[in-house]
Amino acid sequence: MAPGFLTASLIFLLSHVSGVARVVAAVGGYMILTMGLMFADFFGYNFGMKDAAGFVVFFDLGSIFTAWSLREHLRWSFLLVAGVPWTLCDLLGAQVLVQNDSSPWLKPAFGGLLFIVLLTDAFEVWRKSKQAKVPVHTAIENRDVQGDPSANVVGHQNCDLPPVPMQKETSKRFDVWGNWKWCVLFGITGGLLKGLFTVPMPALVVFLLFSGIDKDTWRANLILLNIFGMATKGYYLFYAQSLFEVARIPQYAATTLGVLAATPVGNFLAKRLDKERFKDIVRLFAFTGGSSMVATAAESQSLQLWCSFTSLLLGVLTLCCRWRKRPLLPEGEEQELQGLGDETPKGAEEAKV
Image (tube, rainbow, N blue to C red; front, side, top):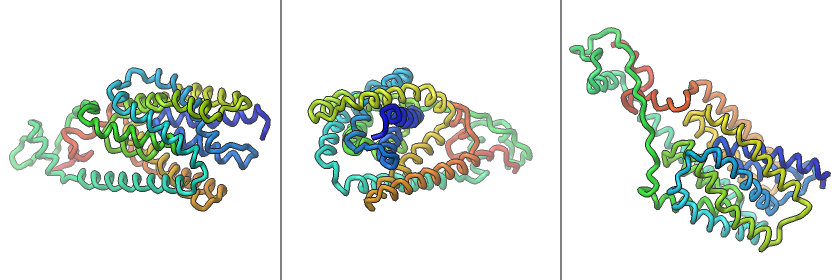
């Protein structure tokens, strides 16, 4: 084992990077922290999955400050409907992890599930992009219906149509009680996966990408949802299973401090992300985590390390290319590009007929 100060410094760095990911997207934090602890063996550190589960408890402890910084976006009905099953299933999953720590199928199955989620999301994105392609004359007819005086010309013979005025849409709040079954299912699957893998990524990605919940509500409530299971999981791991180690107290403290330092940085970055970039970051974490977990089937830690960094690098390069083609929208204005309706493509209002 490396000297205590270097170990605590490494844990602080891992916790800080993981904390930034959690504050920005509310996902990816557990994955980065767990992956970093697993790869630390290459540098002479000795951390196992049980140690990672213990660090996650103190990671959640530092996240209390993060939840407080996002308190204006909390939805208590969502926390009630999804939080109770999440907490119970988190404890159940942690018990299964302790008893099946060496099971060879857990991590590859987790990675495969992540890729299924990403393929489903990719198909959904492709389907919506096909539906969004509307001919120019359709956009003009939409303007007639809306009563645009510049378009009310017989036969649409007006040569230069002025731009269609933007109409800002009000985002719909997620209907918790109307979708309570999905919230309960999300709590069960998310809590079980968190306790079992310390990374509940599949349940989170599915709910975020397909539920329509806004990013600030998602960030605030999911972070607090993770905190709900902290006390019961800490009691089970540190008292019932006696996994608490006095020698690791500096590392536990470094884990909490890393999240505290990451909170203002993550909130600063999150305010500069529109909805689509926010989802792209979630997809990046899911792709990296899936690649890492599938690679564990080969039982080679070096291969898992290579796959993880390669997938992360490819994902970052893909995002850079994607974001260069799409301008960054100011916060709260990403809906304005839809013009008078979701089916009107950008630039159609400027076409000449």
